Length: 332
Length: 276
Image (cartoon, rainbow over all chains, first blue to last red; front, side, top):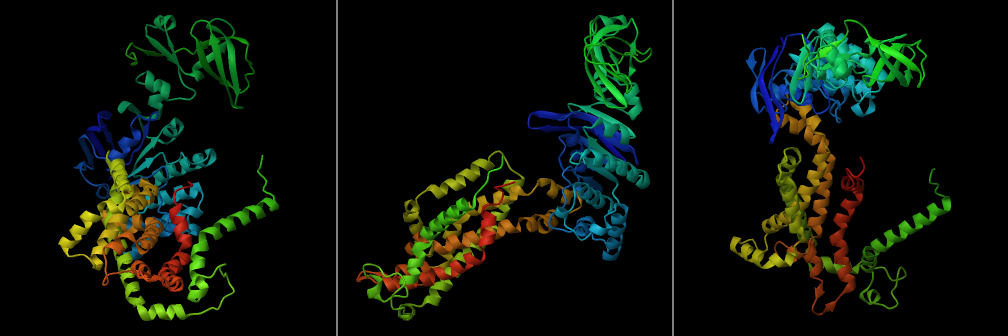
């Protein structure tokens, strides 16, 4: 089991409220991603759940048992750190074995579990090496191995892939997702990378300045963002947010159109000039300076061969316009 | 552009480094050489460098006149005792400063170091009175305590620097892995800090061994360590350079040997954290 309930959780460092008060329920077996810009409090929130930071108010319950004042060792959670945080003086085997040793597990059973974790993570041939002799990806696997052996109630990941290169990151991302599918244990994953959030999560929690902006499945967040912050944060390239007269035409203070929902049309729409074009092969990203709505980003197919200075007309696809009110919230 | 170092330049640099090293080592070398000379050769002018009548007479005279082993034993107890006591006090102090710092931690560290800037003689008189009151004059325990106190700031500073190098995430990982504070210190912190603790111990033994001011002023006969043993050869009847040199050589030999065998550890310890 691994249900985690946060009730009015608050965290202040000195006079600064990092998390002003937050409620959240994470169901057993869910893969939840905390996403948000740097300094939004996502790592702090994870550390509060882990018990590495003390709360300034509110309660944290694990499986409906109050864990607010429990030390990290007693919460039954496992954590994978951004820096891997392996014990440099211990071999891979001893690193993975350490939590079992702390739990006082029978040595034969512990050895069996270490072997099977190593097998799952392809670490069998590295068991007698020290962490310093491993590559970044292998170290990350050891950190995951150390987390899975004790069969925790939930896994906490603190930006675990940000020290890896791009290709390895994609691989590890898939491995972690597969691990979740086979273990079916609750996972809480912190990242600032919205691609990781979109691809891995059952449920995304978008945080901004210590508060939850929206909770929902990746596609809910993409299709129906609750406000301009979520609209701008989820999706790449960013959603175009347009104020002024054009928005007023739709009865809103701000309208939002995703770059992939803007089309190049022969006439009508918004007239403009191509400012920048990025050809990615499969896609083309265009920055278009329009006369009426300022600069907009547009995502077109790879075959579009427009160059800076070309005159174009762009128009949003019907039914793909998001409307926001004066407070930034989505209008019904 | 790469900076090319020519062979000629390398040779010159090496020669300069060796010259500087030789200048630093020369007084010790001269002391050792003098200890093998007769008193007449020791004060001969121009000085005799290698071509003199080598003799071991000074050593036998020194051993006959004073009990070297007793001084040596006192030195070992005082240097070893003050180091052990210092480490026992400094390890928890440095842990808390490195891992649970408060807003005064930096100030406390500076204040501790500032005590090292005070001339020792400034507190000699009060210390002497305190020692009389406690009955610690000319006792080993008194010297162990005072040498521990004067070196404590350095021990705390050194350990603090080493502990700061240990990433706190690793300690947090241990906590997440179910380690109690005791297990965390025993299985994770201490093994990682061992190089630092070892070089702190070594440096402190050397400092305590060579300490002269307090050992000379607070001892007479019973607790006198090797520093007092050397000093006892500067007599009012005049200096006997060869015997003084023999006594000095005997006094510095143990620490020189210890330093020689642990130099790798010492250099590593003293430059720890200098390059990330």
